[in-house]
Amino acid sequence: MKRTGVADLPLHGGSAPRWLFTRMVKLSGAIAEAIVDEHGTEVFLQRVADPQWFQAFSCVLGFDWHSSGTTTVTCGALREGLENVNVGLRLSGGKGLQSKGALSSISDAADRGFLSSQLAAGLARASRLSAKVDSAAVQDGHQLYHHAIVYDSAGNWSVVQQGMSDSTGYARRYHWCSSSLESFVNEPHTGIVGTKLPCVLDMTDNKCRDARETSIDLVAEPRNKVETLLRTASLGCQRSLLEYSDAGQLAGYRSFSMPKRLDWDAVSRCYEFRPQNYEELLLVKGVGANLVRALALISQVVYGDEVSWEDPVKFSFAVGGKDGVPYPVNRKAMDQATNTLAEAVRQARLGESEEKDALKRLSRHRFLGDA
Image (cartoon, rainbow, N blue to C red):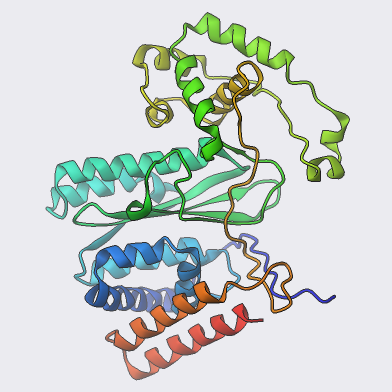
């Protein structure tokens, strides 16, 4: 049977040409303005947090539908586009060093009167926690290199961040939205886009509630007790030859290997700080993927708590096909994305040729989705 609708997204080098990026900035600002005028800032933030809409948005701006640059360049264009229109939205962060500047950018927005200092503190916490969750609590082999937070003056926000796998060279995108968020550490994402992997430690899975509580209890113990428990758990992490085979991975055999190195200073800081919940634990300086993994495995092996090894990815870059391979197209979601954008383009303050080109690109996105 012929397979259709599968798209690989390798990371591409280089940058968008200036003539294209300039047009992307103008168009992104115009679309944001049209949507905010019609529906308000919260709806625009919800759209950004929708992986289908975000992908269609990048295509309207001028990117190829299969290009990994849709995340970094689209967010870069949107940041400048929002600065050029008065719609009550800002974007902080970006790729590489810009991602580390998100907190200072939020602080600057408060200094300029766009936000109250209290809302700025809440946004800064959301920025830090979302990045820490996707780099430490969800261990899928993708290192974050892009983090962008879009927000309004009322403190509503969406986060779009992306990680890269060193082993495959492929990207994974993570979407968050404050309007649908109930917990930063319990199934918080509006969508994770990437290729599903056979073995991912996901401490945000609802089934990990007990393991998260045990992790908090563990760091309240003296360091020597944690070391003893770690040795005990390591003895219980026996490996099977099946783990090294493709068949074993597909059958669900898990690798319970302990991290080779731990930041024991971070363990000591946790003991002194005594975090009251998993969010506070993640925000302790030095708490990273290795310590999260060690605490999770102690919780599972020593105390019998359930830990999730299922990949939380919710969307794939394979958009599906009419024959249902690799799975049916989500036509409703795709139609909603394209229809919303089409209406925004029609209402945007654009020239006739710009509007025509944007709608043509959007029509191509719909056709590819129906392939």
